[in-house]
Image 1 (cartoon, one colour):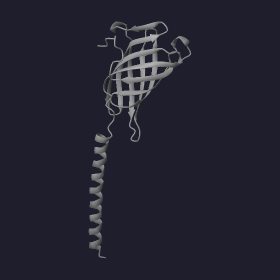
Image 2: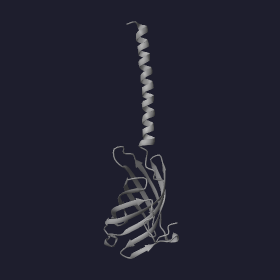
Image 3: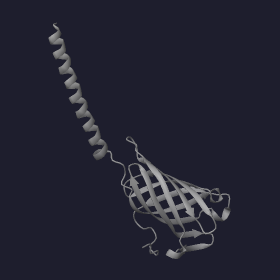
Image 4: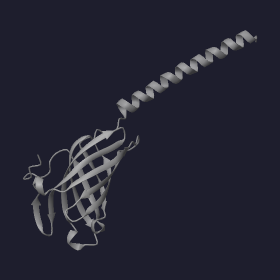
Length: 175
């Protein structure tokens, strides 16, 4: 084989590899963006937490309701939350705007290609007595629903949480 034929074969192989690699990169990018996108979690969410374990027995079984506004930039999440509902040992109540506690959310979405996407949220709530921290580990079932568990520093609580787009409290005006 002559040097000219060798160089020509090498250049053809190099060109074929570059074109094939470019097509493969475009195909993988298209799959990531169109077939396997991150969940669309930006917007308004309503969520309820139910306390399962706590060191303060009156909180056991307590259900709290919140409304959240989330923004997703890439896989990062930011947003705000307001507590709007409580059903505890002291009774059931809906909070008007002036009586709502507010919180700030930060988190991220973890893309999982072979199972449901995972969402982690860290929430710092400005309660009436003190600031508290909550952590949510959620599975994004769809763009309309997430569910999982929460942990809170308030009385060492943990339990279940469900996020949804639809308002679960019929009597509560959350506008």
